[in-house]
Every structure is written in structure tokens, then in C-alpha cells.
Length: 308
Image (cartoon, rainbow, N blue to C red; front, side, top):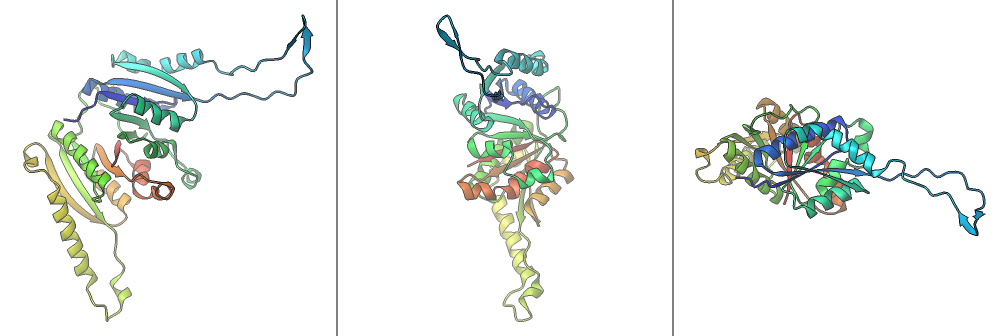
């Protein structure tokens, strides 16, 4: 069984994070976990025109003091109102306020509290946002080693009863992170006696005609061997006896990885996608976009992301 004792849910008081909090509360109830609702705010100070020279009052110079435009107690009141439904649901809940950079504070809070799971909402992103550097969610995925569950606006509302995922799709590319994702997916499937789809996507090969008539090999035959090899590797990572406590299905697809993952999730009405994320330095962060980011951005169900 998956051990989830501490859940961290960052909120920005938007409808998107409200949706994520709903899922976090349901998970906290199911696992009887402690839920920390984190709100990170920035201090902004308006710079007034240059003040007049200090006035001597009683022999002491006095100057205007700049105050924070929104006081901490008002912020807390706003967050408490935002979290009222969660409090009403009687989840074990704590509200934490931090000031600073959201990415830094979320990662630090997850580490400080030994979070077993971070639950975040994902915002709809326009074309310009896709061109710009990654979203807060993407940055958090790169800075925390903890599992992150992203809840898109399109995801269904969390059930009022037990939150058991009955159909889970796990995307596997045989990297260390995807193997960890697979292990986690099997634990989730075991809890619910769920249907677990193991999907590996093969990148499309070049058109056979590109090799000319004198090509030394048959591209279709080569592709078939790749499929057979991938299927064999998928079957090899299924634990012995798994069919007794879940319903594993191995599937091979060809095409763009993120499109095939999303297609399979939609066709099989998956309630959860589990996927690995590659960590690393600056180059990895630039290339992270490919599969994991696109799946998170376009999924219609929650996506659980794990790093190696």
C-alpha cells in the first residue's frame, strides 16, 4: 500500500487551486493524512515620489515608513475563507503562509514537512505562455524530489467517497524515473484492484522509401522487432502474481509520445496518469518540455509525476 501521511497543497486562491485542494482533501481523508495548505505571497512596495527633507521633531529626525500593502493577517483570513470547504470536510488541515518565491518556498516546505505527496492545480496556458519559460508547476517538478499530483481544470471533481483510481495509465520509457513511476502505479492499483495500463511509445521511424531500393534492412521488420522487444520488456517489469491483485495490460503505441499517452488515457477513460520526470541540469530543464510537460498541460485527468 502507498504510504501517504503528509500532503502539501500549494494554493494561489484561484479556482484552479480550489479544484486541486478538493482533490487534496479527498486524498487526505482516504489516507488519513495530515494536509498542509500553503500560500506563498510576495511583498510589493510602491515607491513614492522622493520625500521632502526630514523634519526635526523634538530634536529627532522623522521619515515616512513604508508598510506592506496587504497585511499578513488579512492574507491569512483570505486563505482561511478559501480553505473553509476543506475545514468543513474535517480533514486534518493546517494553513501555512510564506513570503517569497513560490517555487523556492514550495520545495522548501515539501522538504521540511517530509511531504509524501504535493498536490497542485495547473492553469490553462496560452500560446505565449508555452513559448516563455516553464510554469510554476514545471519549476516545482524540477526542484522537489517528492511525488507531485497535478490536477487540471478539466479533471472531474473529487469523489465524496473513497478516492480509488479504478483505471490507471502508466507511461514507461524504461528510464529510472519511469520505473519508479511504475512501482508507484502498481501500489496504487493494488489498493483498488484497478485496471493498470502499461504503455510504451515507440518513436516513428523514417519512411522506408528514404533508404532507397538498396536499403540493407526492412524498416517494417525492424519496427516489428522493436515492438516485440518493448513488449517483452514491459512484461518483464510486471511483478509475479500481479494479475491476482490488479489487472495489468501491456500496450505498445507508435508516434509522438505525449500524444499517444493522452490518446490512450482518453480511449481508456483513465482516472490517473502516472509518469516519470527526468531531473538534471539546465539542458535537461530546457528539454523537459517534450513528454511530461505536454502530458501535464493537456491531460483531462490528474497526473502523478515522479522523479528517479
